Figure 1 (tube, rainbow, N blue to C red):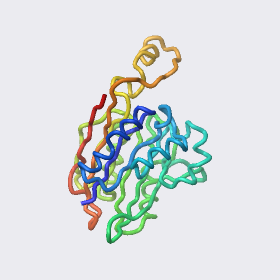
Figure 2: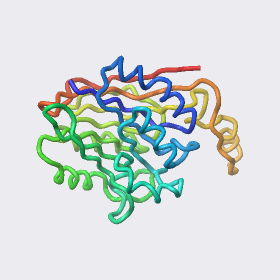
Figure 3: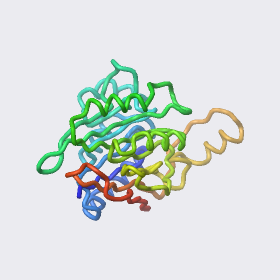
Figure 4: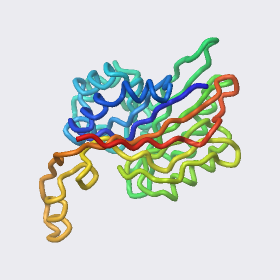
Length: 262
């Protein structure tokens, strides 16, 4: 059995703190072989810096995936090409910094593992078609490759459509971006493990990690406000995916993780 732990969007310092606090015991409890986390909000609640990337990669996260906030901290342009384990969505136009795919080997004998970061298009910035880009990515991968996709998208319909499009062609798909964990974990008809959204790692008593008061002012007045990270208890949300390396297939539906700490 090869177990991948996926952590939902890490939101600022509170999200990094709860990952630091719980990751080691989660890896032990669930016999985790590999950890992937969405890191596009990990620096001060939006974007990613070199310092924050180093912090997360050094505490046990193997790969950081991206999303629509990937470029919010401009310093990422200075280091992303040096960090193959920091991904930006693969369906940005060609010629931009970074990569949307990490190809590595795991297990003994070694099996290719591909981690793919994708961005949705519904209510999102304009990017290339994630369906067509995944066709090209899959055509470029070696045979017998275990492929795992983080689809960072707003609309559940778009997530489900891509999941059915890729069913049987990738081993696992997880949705990110909404910061709210869904309860629809399943094995799709052709064997792909799927969850619409992993949730987030960050402040629990919040609006998607942000203090509630400014968000309420924004909704009630329509005026711009300054977002601030919430304080208090923290939540870690994600899922463990179970695969068979010999077949590169999922053996069960994802196992959701949802833990609260003071």
